[in-house]
Length: 270
Image (cartoon, rainbow, N blue to C red; front, side):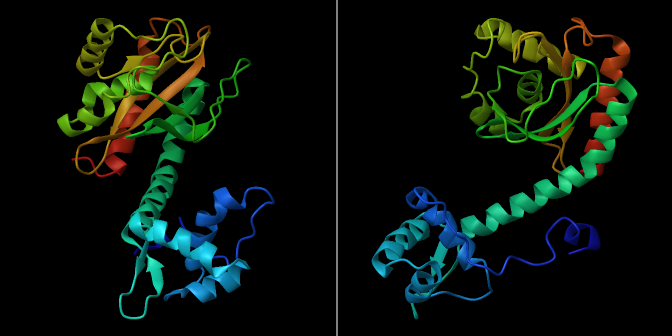
């Protein structure tokens, strides 16, 4: 692991057992168990976990069985002790990879924002939808701010349309199941119109979504590819329709496409 990767993760893990807000323990207990298991290297017994969390063994055991069945924990058949499972390991890798992408993307996004004066959004493309990963606010008089973690379906944003345009057959199989969201009266729901716009986006290398996600807001998105040459992210400029006209000016389109291409190279596209 190189120094850049290390800089994206904490110096050390927390060493205290998590506490759960009153009234939410039933919902948060599985997460508290996983947090506790990750407090140290090595395995945990049921009694140790129950004592650490201050809860009855029977209650802990039920959740351990569910977490093991789902792959978040594994159990040594010899001593019956629990350790992180394959799914928890993969989740950690994805979180670290996302942190790395944000670290690489932030300078590109900031330079683009400084050039155009509008909000710049990086979105991950997942089986759950287009997920906002990072945002650099524009600072214009009418600014549009999206919160990281916000999710859109693939038909209701410029980012979604550019994703469909450059999706691999495998990606398209998953993503095309999420094209039914209506966010405004102008969201594209007609299949013929949607796939026509997707085809145009692939041919021109960018997509827009005038008032399709939010009324009064337009966005221009371009594809960001990973080291496998798969589209993995969408880089978008988002702003008031007063500042990002429909159709958008050529210089704005070029700025977004160049920034997305730059980030793709940094992610290993070849």
